[in-house]
Length: 68
Image 1: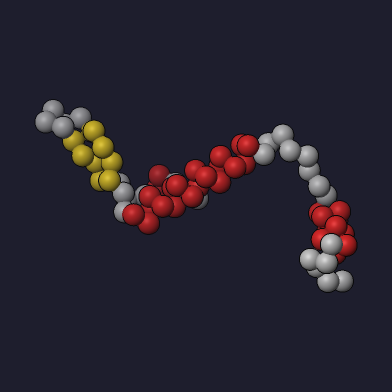
Image 2: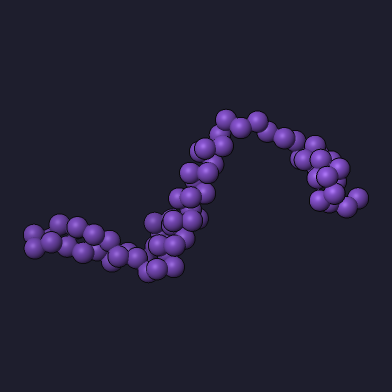
């Protein structure tokens, strides 16, 4: 996950020196979008029921997705 310390923004200023926009290297921008999507997905799933790991493995084996 990107943090402020490992971003390389460039600021666009207006005539009075106030920041009006931020430019980021495209790779950093894409990583931020990916992080944002991950956070949104996590927030959407916060109320979903939890399946214990052992149960998930057993079900995957039953369904033929995992071998013993």
